[in-house]
Length: 131
Image (cartoon, rainbow, N blue to C red; front, side, top):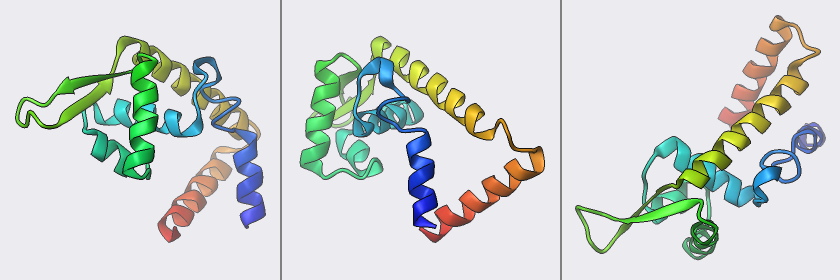
């Protein structure tokens, strides 16, 4: 089963196909997707959600801020903490990533019937539950 998972992963790689126009690492792509989903969040929460240590998360976030993809705002409730959100450039990059994901998914599912697609989705749901 692990061989199939690895083979599947290679078919739509985060780096190389998804997000290639943005020139981001897989960690940076996961951060962009998470910030887009959450809207506004702390760097601590972002690091936790993408499963990065605080120090690694700080470096990845810093790189995204330096590239102008993530904005840092002072937290109105707690002046000691900051909030992160996507910049306009980050939103453009997010749209490109979503377009890449949709193309990849369409390619993967093109040869499957609706019933087969449902079976694959159910299998993936079970696998994620087991993990």
